[in-house]
Structures are given as C-alpha cells and as structure tokens.
Length: 69
Image 1 (tube, rainbow, N blue to C red):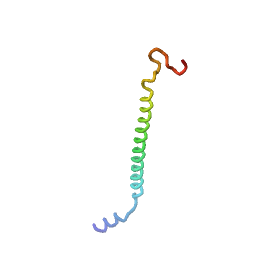
Image 2: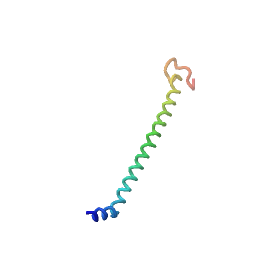
Image 3: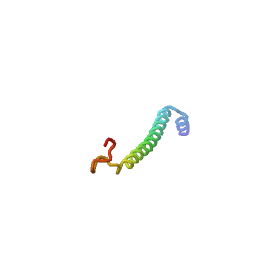
Image 4: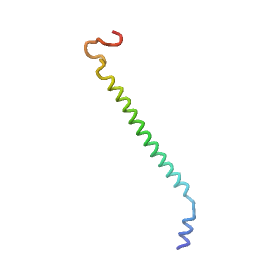
C-alpha cells in the first residue's frame, strides 16, 4: 500500500491539465474583477454627464435659451 501511494505521488500525468484549469480560473476572476470596476467607473462617468445636463433647458419650457435662438 505504501508503494502504491508513493508511486501515485510521484506520477505527474494529468498535473498539467489541473495547472491550466487553475490558471484559467484565476485569469477569469482577474478579468471579471477588472471589468466590473471598469463598468462601474464608466457608469459613474455617464451619470455625472447626465447630472450636468439636468436643468440646462433641454427643449422644454418657452423654447428660449437654446444654442441657435
């Protein structure tokens, strides 16, 4: 039994596939984290643009105050 366990621990077949799976999962988690942060920042950026645009006379009211009036 001891020899069987020793042989099993020394055998390296299939280790590469496990390493690639771990590497792929770590890369996917990293990309997911970066993408989440990027989309959050991008959403905040556009929310800021929309907040600046509020109340600037976007066509409602008397019609005056536009760029080409």
